[in-house]
Length: 136
Image 1: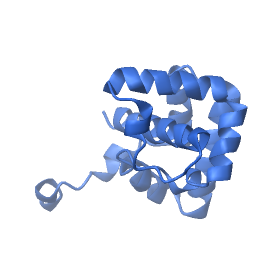
Image 2 (image 1 turned 90 degrees about the vertical axis):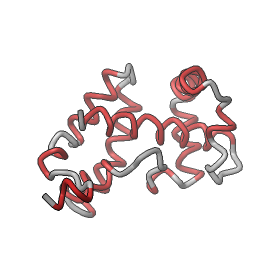
Image 3 (image 1 turned 180 degrees about the horizontal axis):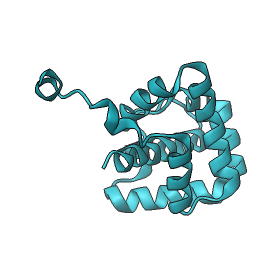
Image 4 (image 1 turned 135 degrees about the vertical axis):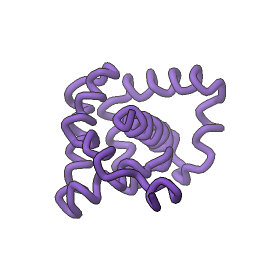
């Protein structure tokens, strides 16, 4: 009863949040293997550092916030340089979905580098989208 009153997620509702299901969702979004592996490898480090249960809670609460693992500007630029076509494609999709220019959507992202901000915008939005889809 208290869980329902205070809006706590039932632990069972988080079981769909797994690296395997996140990976599957990314493939369904049309992402290619190298990009998916880079993101999953980064998320896997979080699972290993904490626990699967803590990872599930954390992933569920992303709510369009950038995961700390992707906040490093140099790391984000590297992702952009490895996957620039995909990132640019996703930025265009996000602009169409939100009807806002990417710069407006990324105002809260602190990095000065445009490449890093685009990567962070895409990762923040798409991982949050996946989290919402996995809880349906």
